[in-house]
Image (cartoon, rainbow, N blue to C red):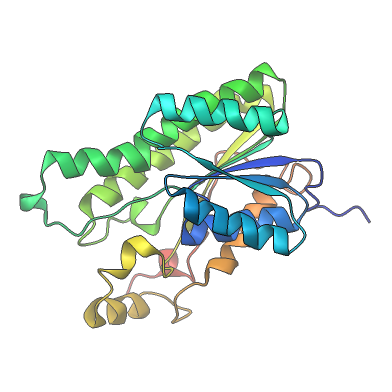
Length: 256
């Protein structure tokens, strides 16, 4: 039987691939044979991810870019194209957060979060999807959303708004890119020990999360790999686009 999840010969670009969740998904793609461009603002962290991938027999290279700056993304797209000739998979996993109360929220902070979490992904899709279309490369775009995108969570106002916008972007682009053979989906992770949410995970909040998570635990970063590989595979998810896929331990199904 053909391996539905084989990504041999494919190139994946992992924007935010140097973060906790992004790096895990990038490693999952590499383990299935994809060569992976790890893109992040912190080049040193990106190079650490590349080292891990290579130690496991994969192929990867680190690149530096600021997702909120169009010129930076254009430059890194050119660099990746020179390295690989193009790409088939785009993983959008940048993210930043803040626990600033609503009435204390300044517009500089609002702009920073929106620039990374929402505008940055719009810019990335404009640049990288356009190249895919020009090269007539069918492929997959995977955006990383959040449980707060569907039911806004306390303490993360701007983050919740940005991720709700990302869901809309995902479904709009799924319609826009379908005629070109490019699928666009989003993963909605539940509560994972990522950098941006550790600072607001006090005892009271952890207890509340566990009460609303049927599986009664946090997710492990590796548990996102299967969904990312499935969505990246043209064989395994060929008729899946515009979907918002929950990986949340049942959080989205919980009420009282």
